[in-house]
Length: 387
Image 1 (cartoon, rainbow, N blue to C red):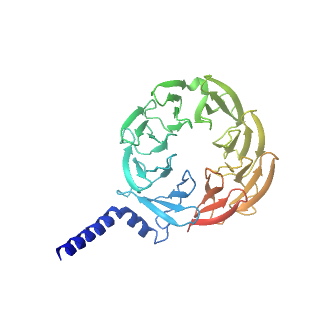
Image 2 (cartoon, rainbow, N blue to C red):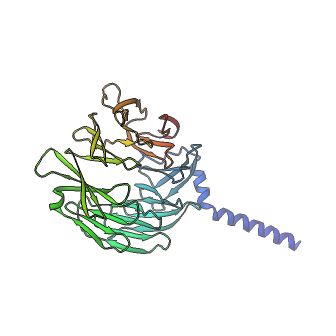
Image 3 (cartoon, rainbow, N blue to C red):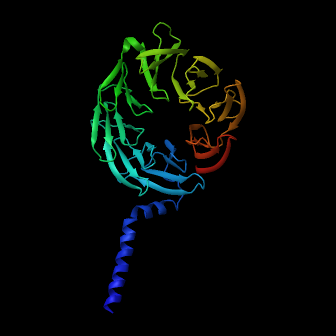
């Protein structure tokens, strides 16, 4: 009799322990019994997991939703305890962690357990508005705000380094090289290139070097920097200079029309796509030859963008005939310089297009939906989130 009572007690304790240890998982499962987009009001950030099995998204709420790519089913959600609005979601390259970024901090989550590990802040903590990026080895998370950048160790939760040469500069941003060696901190009048390991400044680009209004990013190889500035002598000219880090000099220059530029690179590092929504110009350049391959003039609005498809041979840009049908997009063949096809996005204007690392899929985010497309056929496979 005593043995039966003991076994019954042990069984009850095991059941309770299982329930409490899986509390987070139970909460996540229940959350997906309702429409998964109910908690989101417009998608603000989206990311494929490195192996391409999952998609994570956030949208003006305290919840990050994760879906299975193949089935379209909700897998789990990550919810901040303080109800802070999540602005961005990131996967670590090693696929062990997810970071959710709010205006004041960043939380690292263990993907296997879906539990938070650490919460990191910018410096000083009183300054809100954060950006973040994982280093290529997934060992660190870089957090930056308008007054500096902080490097945090993900495994230990310790602060490693602080980078702060742009105190109080409006528009301060950073970029990490794909190699994990370098950091760019970009202010209104100057740009610093840092050695990420030592924390030392390698080079400082000043006002005289860059003319005016600088912006910069690493090229995909992580060993070159693209620096954008307006030409002080020519009002209608923007200049894209390419800096070789090892040679410590500018090696190429591309002249394009002045305006608000957005750019992206082909994954083979050969081409750059430039979208100038001030002048309504879309161009594709060969970076090796500094040769313009495509120049079209669709009617663009603020925030308009273009993107390379994973084959690096085609791009998607807003249509050059929007009067025919709103939210129409053109697919251009770079090599042939011709428009291949057009398509209409029924859920509204497209805000983001990202591709999985294997290049099989693209995720198309519009005003009211997240869609998975076959990147070769450009056919929609499933809809994860529609309103």
